[in-house]
Amino acid sequence: MNLAAIVLLLLMAFGGFCIAYWQLLLCRREARILNSHRVSAHSAIQKSRMDLLEIRNRARLLEDSVSGGASAVEKLHKAISNTTFGLIDLFSKDEEFRQTARKARATHDQTSQQIYKTVRTTNKALHILADTLIIGKAEKRLASRKRDKAQGSDDGQ
Image (cartoon, rainbow, N blue to C red; front, side, top):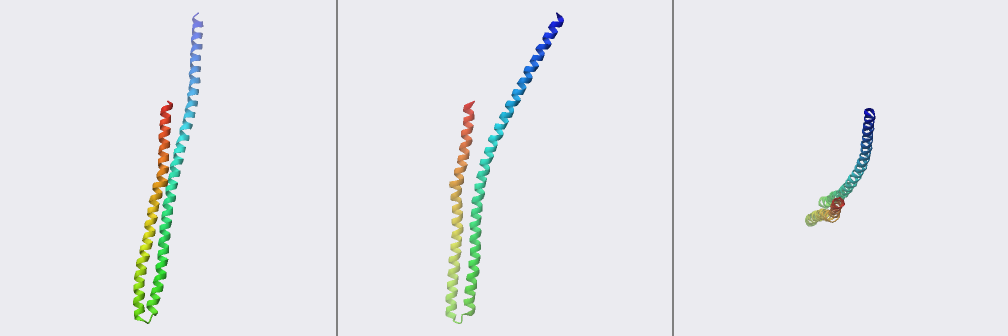
């Protein structure tokens, strides 16, 4: 009888270990599924962040391109006007004509500087406007998705 009780206890212990091992396998499976969902959600958040960063970088690149282009055009414009007014000053024999050309040059240079300054200011203003409208909306959309998902996960538990 003693031997039968020992065998019965051993079988019960073995059954307990089998059940524990089976539970361990189920928990590991659930942990893998949960981890894959976490990684997927993290990837979606990272993708949204990268998309927003790409939009910001494109806007910055556009602003820098317009500003650089305006500077290049301004330098070329100055070179042409300096050459033109310099040749007039050099080859003109009439002193009154030279004085008129110098006044025209001063007016031209001042107007040109104001125009290029206006182009740069407008470019910055458009960048700020685009940042406010486009990027601000994208950030709000991303933030609202985070809130909705956080509220959805709280409600589901």
